[in-house]
Amino acid sequence: MRVVVTRRIPSRGIELLRDAGFDVAVWPGELPPTREELIAFARGADGLLTLLTERIDGSLLDALPTVKVVSNMAVGYDNIDVDACTARGVVVCITPDVLTETTADFTWALIFAVARRVCEAVDNVRRGAWRTWEPLGFLGKDVHSATLGIIGFGRIGQAVARRATGFAQRVLYTDRNPVAPERERELNATFVPPDELLQRSDIVTLHVPLTPETRHLIGARELALFKPSAILINTARGPVVDTEALVDALRVGRLWGVGLDVTDPEPLPADHPLLQFPNVVVTPHIASASEVTRQRMAELAAQNLISALHGECPPRSLNWDAVRGRTV
Ligand code: NAP
Ligand code: GLV
Image (cartoon, rainbow, N blue to C red; front, side):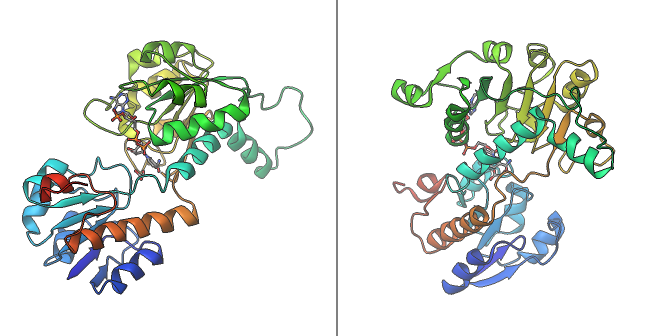
């Protein structure tokens, strides 16, 4: 069987696929293949190991009718039209859990970078502008004892909450449903409606998937509810925040600081208005990028692909039941 990997990925993933006896073709470019390039490269493939940069929809699958499995090396799957896959009998797999802790770590990296103005201070030193100890220089916001508001209290949201206990924070969260009371107690977290969370939090962090319901979840109306002293962190997906509304809010000083690992558009052009604000820290979608975690993601994506192509229930599939009529 032939499988196509749409970019170079950590070696363990490729080794597992080759050890399973597949003919493995890896897209060699540093940038993702265009749609036309992908169709040409993947012609005749039985399975695809994709990244979040590839749009997998009905028309792509119709152009690649031999594909039976799409294994995304990501937990987010907004790049995949799962219904279109199911309708064509294509199994879809993702890589949850293995990246939860690393993504939560990075969320905290952004919280600290913004609250304590780390990037501005580093730039200052690099520019040779460090002249003395300044009693009024780079004053930031305390992270300890702040109220942390978590929107989307799933795997990553809860892992972020667990770290908050070490900083003596009050944790508010909102989700479609509250978690079990024991879990709330364990994480010292209180369920509140979304507007109350925005009004009360010093730091708001987003951990929902991108869906039609969460697109522009944070828009002009919501930004107007933030405390002017608040910080917004987004490590979920760029379009969860309305970028235009965010730029407008920053222009009138509606937010104290913003940390974004994901943006809309992505990548963010260097001349984008967001990058003109010194209180905005943007990183290039790297929250899961630790050496160990990327190996684990590649391994899980490969295991998913191998199982599904062998007709076995993959470790993490979204539609195995629907496609194969078996119990996951
Ligand atoms: P998860 O465990 O599914 O958690 C997502 C949570 O959001 C769930 O509790 C879900 O509730 C909730 N939710 C869904 N729609 C909502 C809505 N409309 N309003 C309120 N809450 C809603 O997923 P995860 O593993 O934590 O990952 C979350 C997201 O993080 C991924 O989808 C991905 O986009 C992003 N991510 C980004 C990076 C990065 O590199 N920056 C890395 C990893 C993940 P239900 O359970 O009811 O659906
Ligand atoms: C990364 O953004 C992921 O969804 O895994």
